[in-house]
Amino acid sequence: MSALEDLGGEERLRALVETFYDLVETLPEGSNLRRLHGRGHGIDHARIEQFNFLSGFLGGRRYYMEKHGHMDVKLMHAHVPIRQVDADNWMVCMNKALDDEGHSGPHIDKLRAVFTRIATILVNDVPDWEDIGARKG
Image (cartoon, rainbow, N blue to C red):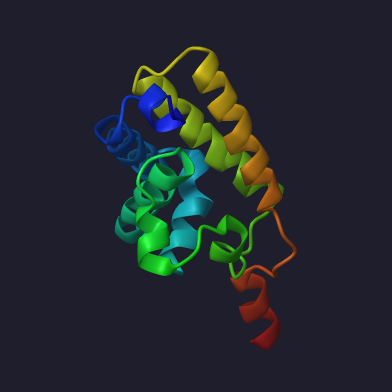
C-alpha cells in the first residue's frame, strides 16, 4: 500500500493541501510563507502544484513529473530564501492541517518525520528579497 493510499487517496490529499494553504493564509506562522508565495506564482498556484507534487511523492500519479519533467523538491525551491524559521512554520501549518483533517497513526507519524526532514533540507542561504532590495536602495 502506498503512502497516498494510507492517507486515503487523492481526495483526502487534496483536502489536506487545501486545509494546509487555508492555514498558511490565516495563521500567524503562515505570514512569511504567504510573503514568499506572493513573490512567486501565488497561493492558488501553490495549492495546485503541492497536490501535484505530493501525489507522486506519496506513491500516486506523478502529476508534477508529467507537467514539469522532474520531482526535485530542492530545485523547485532553489530560488526561494528559506530560513529555519520558515521550515518550522511550514511544519506548524502542515501538522495542524494533518490534525484538522483527522490524520493519525504510525503512517502519519512517519509522514510528519519525512516532511520535517524535507523542510529542513530546503533551508538555504539565498538572500532574502527584502534584504537585497534594502541593499540596492
